[in-house]
Length: 449
Ligand code: PLP
View 1: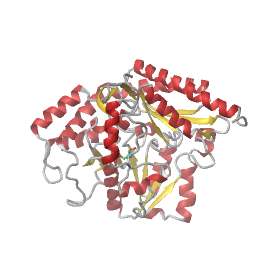
View 2: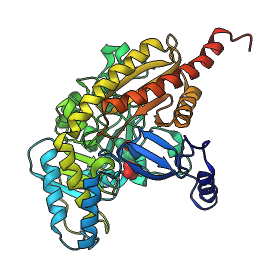
View 3: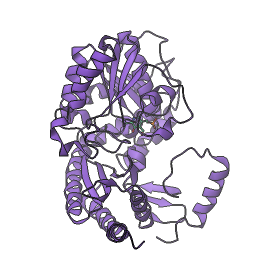
View 4: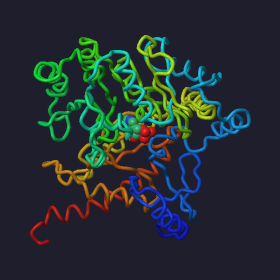
């Protein structure tokens, strides 16, 4: 750090932002970024940070990877825009073919291009209704699928996302994810109920309330992201998939956050060996260029010209950046995510043994959640402490974000080395020590306060 945070240049930006920019965004701390390279981010005052957010799971190849920068630069000289909704260019079909190859299942797939995760979900939602001609959708409590009205209707992770925006798109029913309410903490404590929610859909919901033949699709995150980095048990997605197939329902995997190598496999759903009917991709797909992709089995994507389109979706620069991103992922970044992810998980589990504040550590690859609790016995959520941990890490030069109510997430770029992981762990440990000290005092001497 070369200044206090925020520094004088950052403060100028913050003032202007406050006055002119929508204040609906969810900034956790006053980081004003000037430039970034690899895993390092520099702020407006020259302070440097280790980025364990990847710009929210976007810069999987690291910031400004030289090959991505070169690809963007070259493409910008040749063609920036022509609109794939009305004309053709080879980059779109080449990228679609590549996405068909790297997503699970045989290659007979088609891809719709948009600009964001929400748009990828909107397309999946519209396509599900169009293809099945069914009116209803199932989604999960704790899910985050985006903020446009369709995607928001599927979302159920925080009430603030929905407050003031009712009515949403009708026909969506939210069901419990791979934990149930008898397990307030985590399914691992109650292994017997790990797929109880799937049985509950079949035995209760489909018999008492929702006719399954009216359900077009089940939307599911392979690992719940915003909802708290919840990793479902090994049999969960298989069971859910079987349920979907039994009733002719489409299985839609939202891989917006978990896809593109983040979990140590190209798609997170590969950990559960399921072939979804539709996959929604965005975030890490193009190393920071805006791109959303809805990848569907060809027989499902049967809509006719005019049914759905987007002016900017799949623009040449984003497609070029995506092709280069996929090259880099295939050249070793996915393996690196698995390797360094396993190392980080192990080290964090060691920290869990030493710090009461850590109630659980979970994740796959470089999608890791650290659940904070006030007390390991009662599992009381450490909500304020979560915020303290995030702030203190920022002040010490480590960028992390939260999810769920009491979870902090580690999602560094997939280029991360073990040494960089160690640097982050050292900072994290110092912060835990500091925050836990305050916690212990409160827990040990509640009456004195
Ligand atoms: N789906 C998931 C799983 C996400 O994590 C997000 C964003 O965080 C979205 C959809 C929405 O993506 P976007 O913000 O690009 O619209």
